[in-house]
Length: 227
Image (cartoon, rainbow, N blue to C red; front, side, top):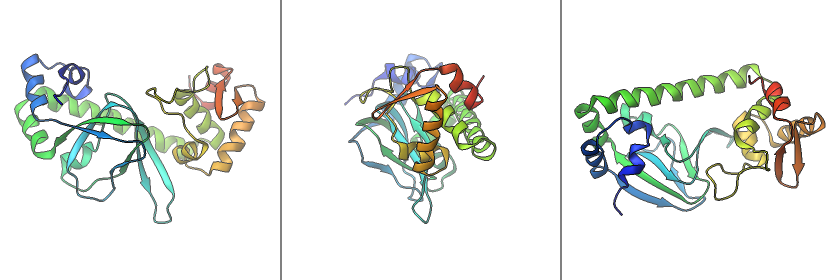
């Protein structure tokens, strides 16, 4: 299928490019469809391409020798992954798996390097994208180091739960299981369960079967230390 130039136009990597430059980018890209649960990348494997999420949701994570999972981020439309190894030539730094049916655009290292040499606007965009990602990971380290688990869960819910009980299955934000929440906040599933009970007792949320309904967003913000 042909690459949709309009989708590229809204991607942070290619912001500010004219039509001719966008067409040049599109010619270097390939499309890939992935089913839910399919592995897209394995950490430490040789890196082959950078990927941009066109639709669906992708989980990027690390796995310890003991098999413990730490989710680094959940990516949605317009977001990229595998940026670092494409730029530094090293192996994949993390694994990636499709949380829903996913459509991706990809670009090989050779094509990305050519674009960066040819177009300074793309090079500056890449710097901005990577800077935002560094801020994200610094914030993650801060949360894991200085916040208690309940605060981390509250902050997570502000991003991934809605007043209507969580995202729809086909929406951009995947509904998180308690195990996935635990892998994002660096704890065990049972501890997340206790934290959710505390938040429910404090009136910040309501548990509705397997859905989490935010009933007092302000209370959740205060618990999560979010202004």
